[in-house]
Image (cartoon, rainbow, N blue to C red; front, side, top):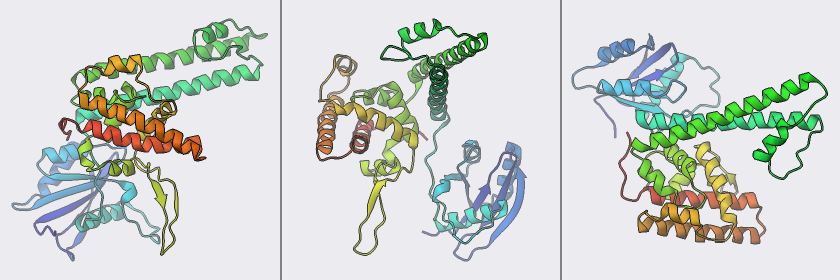
Length: 372
């Protein structure tokens, strides 16, 4: 429906300055460039007051990027709409080889007026703080993995092979500290690598403790707890799912969530020819990764272990029923796919796709409050 009393404002945002363009209502409404303004709050406030008119509805939009959601919250605090646009879903002409701040701002205003832009879901400040914690832990784990790989590469290069079966346990660290090299420089390198790995490990533990503490007053903490009734799902997996997906009520069915996570098959069909390929891998890669890691636990027969039993016995009966149904179905699904000759990675991906549906079902129980 055409909005005849609206002014559509496109912002090409950056760290220091924002390029501003406006599009008048109507198919043939004028699109004009207003120039650039500083990115500070006072300048944005002056722009909003300058554009505001009695009876005129201001509708701002800008691309999601490294500047975050502060601009959206600032504009909404002034009483106007602001949409954050998914950059990958902005229509682009293949032959357009010129990109400037002015063109980007004008294109945003024009396409927003036409309804051709896709708005992303934006978290509130508390939700974003929890997401920052989860992502900081993920970065720390990656850093720890890199440090451990450096140690193993260094030891392998010098013929130091751990005789045990499991690395990075107590025996492994005791073995490393007992290693001796012919040259003091090499001994120093090993000690520095060990110290660096220990610092990364301690950082991961501190962040995990901070996540547990932050769960005490997070509105979605009950949902995170219920999700842990599922096999293979523990605190970090459940918290990652909720901070990245957010309000699951925006997905009316689990198929939409699967597509959002990039877990559905790609397709290139024309005429009578139907060609389907691997999963699309669009959307949120973090959730897709934790789901795939969790899906490996469904290789084994369905069984309710002692730890999961005591962790979920206080949960609502409907949650425990969904969790057991998921375990029975997904373990059978994995075995059936492998028996048909599918690779284990393909079977795990299929299990991860269906696991997302069970998590969707549990997250919607009791209709938890939405985050804005």
